[in-house]
Image (cartoon, rainbow, N blue to C red; front, side):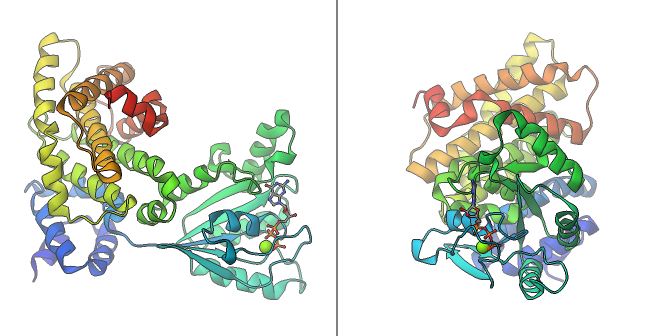
Length: 415
Ligand SMILES: Nc1nc2c(ncn2[C@@H]2O[C@H](COP(=O)(O)OP(=O)(O)OP(=O)(O)O)[C@@H](O)[C@H]2O)c(=O)[nH]1
Ligand SMILES: [Mg+2]
């Protein structure tokens, strides 16, 4: 048995297949680095299991290689228009027209690692458009991710509903977008979205309103892809440089919320070993978003050079002296804030080749720790559950005003 099989055997059964698949796709240097990372996990098997379970999505993001996004939906809803927005090369553009049935065959275009597929309308009733529907469904079955497009004016009726069930039965991650919202009067938009959601059995915030014609909210579509399918994040970042910061931020938030829950594990207060692993995987992911080649070993060296583990311990000691906060809350706030700063430092490094100054690191860590303590303190005195804490931390970080743009956080860091 190889070392890898040995380690894999300790993973929870539900993640073994996913990890095996990732493993098979890795090159030799990545394999060595990945093993080195895994052997750094705590030796207590229960602890290790919990950590691996927490990090599976992250691992998929750092090492996964999925890249086929298929756009599907009824006829004339704007699928080809959306496709053209995603395609980088103008000569790959699809034909768009007000006439239903414009697209009759599947077509695909490459954008770096990222392949987008446009399909004909898939809402055939009876024999009209049957061939087109079959083509669209065949492409959908082969997808890593589906973008389901509907028309805000046409709404979701029986045919649209049936198509939705057919596609969601494929068990492929998807996002639902409601196109042409420019044609909906502003005051009606919320109710149009709500009724589409009701008809699809979704929550309103699971539907992304867009204007494919001018690209409005395209970023939200991509972030939805990244949120549901971590294996796609790197491909998205490489294909669409203008969304890198948002993707990196989303990656950071994911890692930071995992870091916070590590603080709930029965470890010696603020044990940074598992944190370093989470942060290393995050750094590998961010590197991939910026098309920067890095091995897991090199990433963990980088994590060490920023010295955030040390800073976290110091901060923990300082703040515990003040009293007023339970230990788990302090650890959670510090673990998440140091992870955020690490993520930002990684962005600066991969994006601009600049190392964040020690002062900037200290300042940002303090600001974000204070913010986290502030937003988490009303969780109460009782230790929250893992899921609850993870969600709260993610939500707080999504609301963090600093994170609106890279420029905003640059300013706060004084860089
Ligand atoms: N107002 C408005 N019109 C749009 C928008 N997106 C697409 N359209 C228009 O809707 C019509 C259909 O667009 P297509 O992109 O061809 O739609 P499709 O889903 O590919 O259509 P088929 O290939 O026929 O299934 C065209 O006239 C587009 O200009 C939008 O966001 N707002
Ligand atoms: Mg079309």
